[in-house]
Image (cartoon, rainbow, N blue to C red; front, side, top):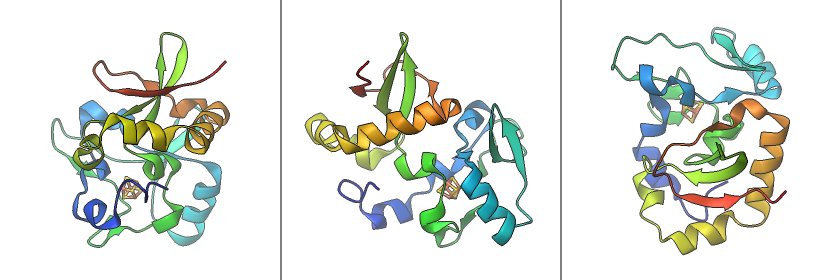
Length: 158
Ligand code: SF4
């Protein structure tokens, strides 16, 4: 989904978005129903836990220790194109900001963060923003809290 601005090689070498610790476990991607069915069929050993009206991968945390997603393999995400929506759009995220839904970009992704704001804005505006806001409407649990300092790339039109 992000091929225009993020090449697969950069992504493949970096696994930062697939590791979580106690403080950012709320970033664990949501597993929507279609993916739950896919997991039940192909990865019956993977355990999920509920979060709001959705599900996430069950992971055990121990303080600051980084725990990697159970779908991460030596060659990348085992789910390929079936990976969770949150993963397909990361480092973009939908946040709630002063009562509005906004799209931000996480500075944790060095490759995308280095791009000029103009490039990010042009990429997000239009179909991509529409898809993110529509999906957030259908899955409100994917709207994450805004973190001060994260660049806001788009604001939902009311
Ligand atoms: S589902 Fe795949 S892309 Fe998403 S966090 Fe897990 S390993 Fe990474």
